[in-house]
Amino acid sequence: MPATAQSRRARLVRRLVVTGTGVAILALPVVGATTASAATTSTSSTTAAGYPNTLDGWIRESLAIMAQKGIPGTYNGIYRNVIRESSGNPYAINNWDSNAVAGTPSKGLLQVIDPTFNAYHVAGTSFDSYDPVANITAACNYAAAVYGSIDNVYGAY
Image 1 (cartoon, rainbow, N blue to C red):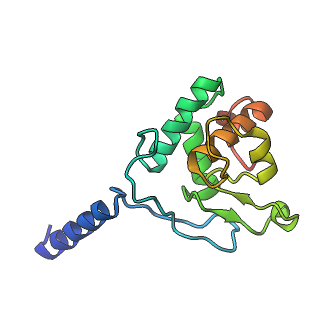
Image 2: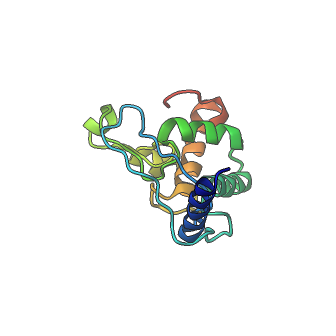
């Protein structure tokens, strides 16, 4: 690698470490969304439960809660749906579909509307539908009730 490229890479690595993400994130807009913003993370490198404050950590924390509550689902099923629904952006919001037109936009990692989030909220998680762990866990609880598992969801749900 040329010296210039090595220097640029070193600065990028240092900057990522300083911001606490440790990884580069490619933020893509939700398909059909009229607005999108880059995913942001807390300055903390771990969640309150000790998981990394990243998509990987949020999924693993959700899976631990789901296991305690008997909610089925796998890492791969959750990850596949998160990437399709929000590209991993916990603040993604859909302002264009029929739910949004009715005043209840889909939001968060798994694009859950507030009535569904409230109905399928899992005790022990935040009541904030933008909270990544709460959003994943509530969405998986809903998917389990309707489809048997988030693993059975391959499109909008």
